[in-house]
Length: 521
Image (tube, rainbow, N blue to C red; front, side, top):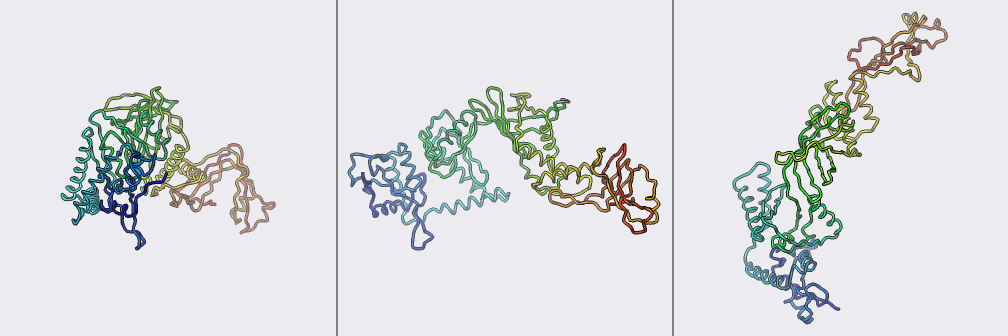
């Protein structure tokens, strides 16, 4: 069956009779403007049929004639979003309501005729500028009044649309958030119009069963049962569905399994929400560097997730990192098998005590642990060397990590080994009159110290730091000259000496600040 479409003349008339604006009284956006092509215009509206143009369409009236369906009296000018909405959710937009919209829109256009229009964009810019001034501490009385009164007026307008709700506004992240709090039990029907109903179903189920908040775009949902929510669906933005929450505090500690040593950590301050099958806690601690979420089920099982943000450390001296010691101790305890316990307090009252939590030591956990371990080694090295290194979130290889660990051990107590080497340690001499007598022997088991002339460099968070010279001590070795005829040596000859390990052999590498001893390598 052919559609009874409007003529081009009637489409232009419908649009211009409402001043090129959407006829929805809660929308009223301008639908026509210039195109990038100077010979064209951009039109973001449609001439919508109040009663469907063909059988099976929304609000189809079988008794109407073809001429009546394509008549200008059966048309209404709307923006594209509103035109789609009235057809998708046609039961919420009956014929009578659309005729009322059309009448009001034409009446308003007539009243505005030959009068300067209120420039909403300029006011919006002023409000935003004033809000930024207030946020940045440059508030003036005029700026405060402008923002305050604009938000207050909007709040009052919203409350008149459904007095069953109390509306609280909040200026956050450079935008205004409105919280709708029901004063009494309210029944509202919500229809999902988006393209992913399975995802919506899962989010809604988690909201009911587990108290998890979720967010939808306003154009993806339609409401009935409240003029306030009908108004919201005409606005571009997001709607955040949230369960009532209570302020809560998690106190947690670790218990070392072998010694039962208890270590208490910082409180995690957050909020708790309840569902039909579990409750959820989300909070932050350690100066907001760590975020913990706990879900506790009716069968007394729980799940815990943990996220760490190290942004607060960026470009800070690694010896001055806030909360590092606590954060490192927490991860180190968990990594080495300590059990984690927590208690939950709401309004100062403990509602759960000594609950053992399981942290999934997955790749994320081990990545954070490894990075904190690397940072700890670097800090200990800097303490020894009185070096200044700035923190940055770098990447490093396993070999680089091992080098840092060995360097910290070297500076702290040295590296000692009693294992026999695969090959004996070798050293070279330049023969002279004094050492030729030594080389002729007899050579005995002895200890040998070798000193590095200049310390090596190591990279800490991308900065090269010089280490003190190393000292190698070989205990219980027998020097052996690798020359067939020692008597034939003359001054200037290069002589190779092998240190053969004997009973009681020991290898010790240390870093020494005093390099005045003669032997060096």
